[in-house]
Amino acid sequence: MRKIRTNTNAFVRARVFKGMSQKELAQQSGLSPSYISLLERSVKIVGPATAKRLSELLDQPLDSLFVIE
Image (cartoon, rainbow, N blue to C red; front, side):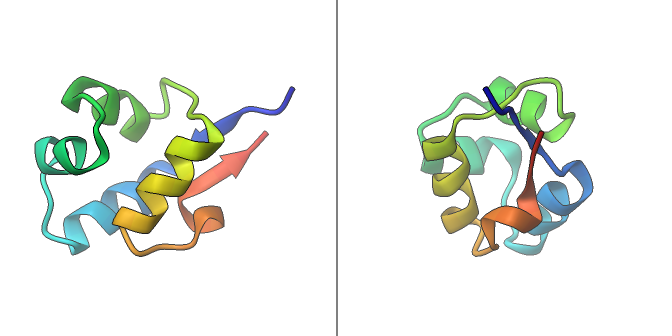
């Protein structure tokens, strides 16, 4: 099974560019701030539906924010 990991630099840049804190992104995505933090550090893998939702919230292509391993 493939794993989806966050492209850390691109993800953080996209969030900051949108003017969002980790907490704001968490609230809008329905995720916890601690989960967003783990994603930004590429500690956790992310599911396809969550990756899609985050890329939509950040207005970025899925393949620029996430890496499929």
